[in-house]
Image (cartoon, rainbow, N blue to C red):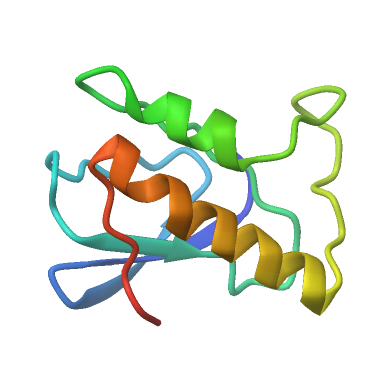
Length: 98
């Protein structure tokens, strides 16, 4: 939707830019991160349904779709990762090691 995001799928890194679509099959190992240094917005659709509950449980709601992401201290980021790791098995999700 906005900016550029790097994603890794099947070991290959690519960059998705605003307006592009990326399709990753269910249960396929993948990762994505913002390496641009600028704000990035993406729309993630998961099928079958259910994965959105993981993101809602782990994430922090923001005021609007254009609100900035919360700034986390290193300790807060560590707690976020711990929460994600603890909840992942409930959603049949495996977190990849960086």
